[in-house]
Image (cartoon, rainbow, N blue to C red; front, side, top):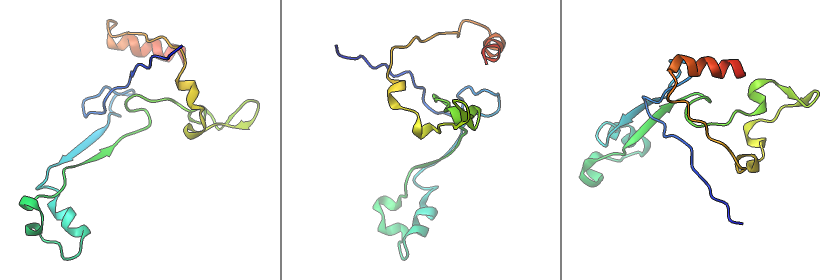
Length: 124
């Protein structure tokens, strides 16, 4: 039987809700003119007039934590050991098939924000 994959991820943006509050991602956008000095510094002898329309790159500088956006917490996030003292798995060691199993998506957006946070903490 064919699997149906549903993408439940959210895009990283400056205004994405974060928990704890204040730990949201910070994305700084540089347009083609703002990044031109940086680009010229990468290549010795390069001049703006050497580039199409004297334009550099459009780039983003991203600052985030492991709790920003859609993510999976590795066992190591919670404790350095698991399974009676074995070293906890880091995220690159979590089997990918754990992420490709039947699932249930719960929508708590209709609850007040303070109640959603309280319920999450009660389950932890």
